[in-house]
Image 1 (spheres, rainbow, N blue to C red):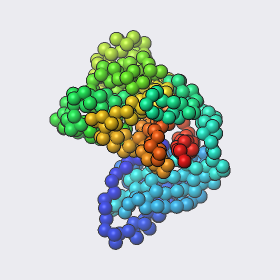
Image 2 (image 1 turned 90 degrees about the vertical axis):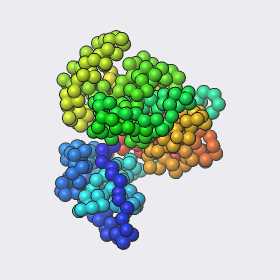
Image 3 (image 1 turned 90 degrees about the horizontal axis):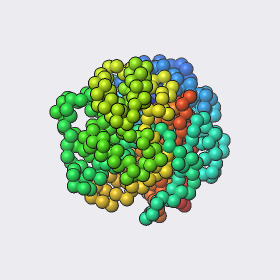
Image 4 (image 1 turned 30 degrees about the horizontal axis):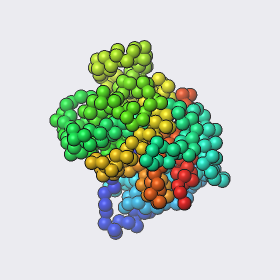
Length: 432
């Protein structure tokens, strides 16, 4: 997935619509040129975007796109989504790239947001779920898939591949944190409106990393951030406010049983970054050699006390997988389906209305809502890891869960191919 800095477009008078449309088209053509290896990167993208996505990273993504789709040939379509924002389709020799484009409403209207939303290779698309699973299995690495019907009893699998195989799931671990928050609210221990006061502890990147000590944040806001934009700073705030042990206790409750003890101790985001990155992974090597009790002490001592500055600034930036088999959060497709089913069942509880809204804030893929009445979603990714998990309600009221993932310790996952297959799966799985 192309990284981005997505900023809210400022509403402008309608008189600006025409020049905005022309500028958007011009910037979209500049993106095509840059994807093809020409153009002026600094002139096209705003400083905020260039900080988040350096030219070398952009060029690596462009090369990956060309390997998958051939050469870019032009802008196929532009559909405005705001005064200075649009969904664009970029034509390639071998298919089409869908992306969201956002321009700065001021100044020279440089690009401040560019997010790839999947590709459509030329040629016939998969016509059955079996074909989707076959194409998924043909990708590099270990692939998993499951579609289940949800009801009063246990989830009923309708299509599966490696459904009991735990893989690294990236940020999908945040579903367990959300579940513990829901449990505590239903138990009367907390309210969505309760606030957390920042104590000055170090935080990973995200919306709260630079907030001063004493800043107060509502639990609902933190929950929405960890699901909708996978904010790592919000994740660590909420995890340690709820308590690591409390979240661990929820693992079997929500059905994270195939992953089992591999998720204990339950790691925070910053802890994983330190274990993987500090001293070339030496901190993580020490951690892995310990038993569970020693690991807890290590996390609460040497890992906590290691400064953020010790984490390499370019961690994960080269696209190479980093210890995904050892230092991650783990779950099988069945685990993720059971977790989504637990959350679904609690949408009728005292925390249900907010839970339902939070889980559906980000549908994962732009076309996910075409054939489904409700779409809840949480994904996870890092180099070599990609998972997508959906909670779905059909037009007829029936509930389903759909999940898939790929782990490849040797190389990054082909995001465009994967998201294209998930789009097809969502379409084919919807009752007609």
